[in-house]
Length: 324
Image 1 (cartoon, one colour):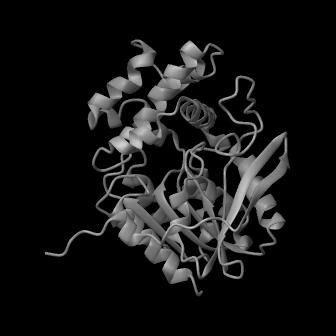
Image 2 (cartoon, helix red, strand yellow):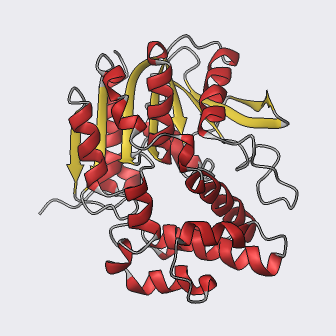
């Protein structure tokens, strides 16, 4: 029998940035960015999930460092960007989908890139689609994973009881801070997460973030939950996500699917886990119907980028486009 490949077998070796800094994008926001790989290589930008998830070192490893010039950045309010959304005075009014689309353009111009591959998963696929549909002339290829388009049906599935039928034990953890509330959980969590009392917003932040970490892998990963357990990270992550979801991402219902015709000329790959709980396969299927030119790959996996079946397809996609 052939042994299954591990994540380390699939990804390129760990590497460090050769350049990094913070870019002032206005509104009092400074975005952390870094470049990895070959300064003369094919430009690509990595868009992390969440929103509010921030960067982790392994994200650099999905691209051949000899052939890619990879730009990564922490979106507003998270990671090493300033100010951080966990701060008591954090103002998220200038943190919207369209602020982030504009930030991508600012980073592209600041780094001296004309056109680039856009790579994003989960919320990163949402932002990648919004950016590509707004600036299709700046995108050479799209590599997307775990498709999320912020329709109300997607939000209700994950936060108002649909996914609870699959993982009831973790749903109880998610519902604990709600103390029996049965209305729109996203709206109620908004009140808790933005309560100034740490005794209120910290448990809410941890419960919201634990729900996502515990349900993102096909097989439960205690390591994934532990990685999301830092209270400062959890509060920022939960606040930013909830802020976006309460506001429907500042998108009209179904906007990204309706605008997918703008992608027709852009080569692309959609990688989707068959058993993805946070972002069910129905959304990826709908995107492929709207963008049939994309190479659509459904694999036996959940949601996480670190699941080997997903990682293998993503690396195959970046390898395929490296010399294009």
